[in-house]
Image 1 (tube, rainbow, N blue to C red):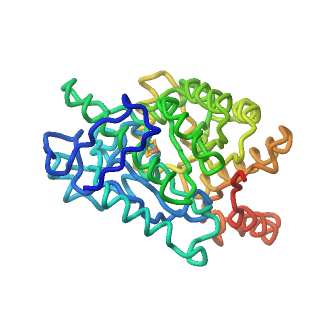
Image 2 (tube, helix red, strand yellow):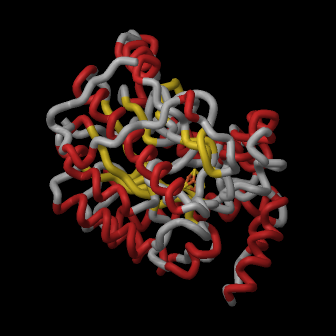
Length: 370
Ligand code: SF4
């Protein structure tokens, strides 16, 4: 295995990564079989990155709306069953399998990304590697055995820091961090060393902690995320915010409060999309909310048409508020592809204008600091 120990890393930060040969398939929180590498990603109309670096299979934040278990992780069902995961979708949030570290394999993936001709890359990816697209890079590792928990947590930290150092020192690629966790604060020094090559962002759909507890039950509270974003700005980092996905309970006053707090951060870009929940998840969310004493507006999920009307209304409200708050030039809406379907277009007063509006957002390239 190649060993690069960057002298700029403080000694206390250098922890031994867990090698593949030491894999212990003890339970649903442990180590996955294949190592962490940079891989092309498949975002459509998001303008987030060309590649992703995913540290784990699974995510302890357990967001109820997360598309990952049904779109990506479900393909790993046979392998996941070896780790005791019977249903990757309904058990989402209960398993986190960190990828092992293999420096040679990581460097090979880094070289492949670095040497990809620009003409072959989607321009909306900004030649960036995203941390992460199917998990959170700064999630808390829960394991019942304290020693094992500590080893896994150190390994997760190694994966992020070591890979970032190698990207910084052995490539010209950009990096986009996206997390819900204030644990990222411990890496602000490393982020800073990238200069404008790194953008730090958090998902902040609302400032209401009670609402986030319903939809993102195990993720850190929005108040902690906002504090981390403010700390990032104070540390001189370039930040962006994903006001996404917002919930049906996020009315105009709630959206205005969130966007006002976001505007103070002087973000490079503000992304927005409304929540899009699969029907089978609605009952689960409702019963969880009842237990917390929160009444939800789940009627917007009753039919596809209801959801589309809700989504358009939410997108246009944010567009108007961004104008009001001086954020219009940095706003990047993410309208779902289905909002351009024939049924939806037919319900518009001016269908041609509706399509033009959608195409403007679908074709938008999010900015990168220079
Ligand atoms: S933090 Fe991201 S990957 Fe993790 S559960 Fe939430 S939406 Fe999914």
